[in-house]
Image 1 (cartoon, rainbow, N blue to C red):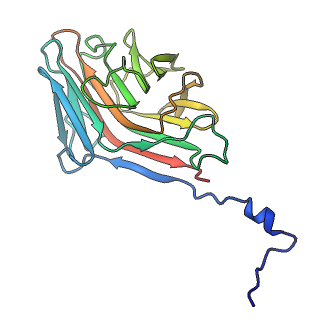
Image 2 (image 1 turned 90 degrees about the vertical axis):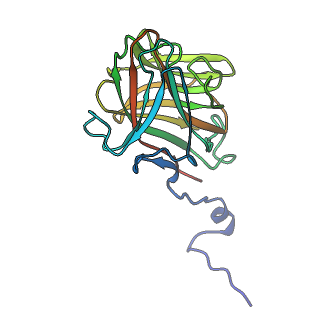
Image 3 (image 1 turned 45 degrees about the vertical axis):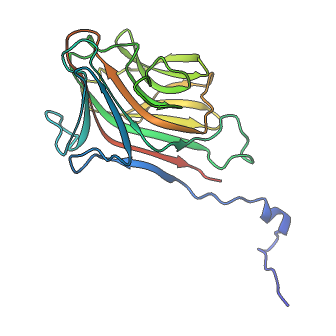
Length: 243
């Protein structure tokens, strides 16, 4: 004869309702060590004088021992992008805790801008964040994207859902010409939050991109015959509070 043992004072019905949490779940990581772009993790594209280079020691970037550098080159219209090949799974904003297992997903990276930044950076193209689709057209003007963009050469935040977007100024926008850590987080309850160096800079709770799967995308282009660049390092993503 089998016996089910329960804690003192507990009943089977209440135990069945207690869903264990498993903390965080790593989804993606790359620090670009080895001096090459891992084709299993990343796709990339260039236009005109654009380039994507990977180095174990990013030239002139203290605090970023390895990374991938996107550069436009000095020909007007030069462009470069990089995007993950595998999609990340996001929590469904607005769902109750009983219908989703992911409470929050974080996407984080370090970056440092260079060249004639930001005056030669193309404001309607530059973007770093997550997108529903990837490719050379995966710019700030696309639908279903969430991340950081340039508004009159100043870093800001946005979320676009099906072509309707909400933008938000950052509390203290960095110049981007020093190494900073950027993070976009989608919370099941609070929508998107945007961080720089672990400090909350903006929250967007309207036009929240509800896609379940997305790609990390960074793209830049110049708008004059001058080079702009962005060195990326320590790209990672993880989910929290799995139910």
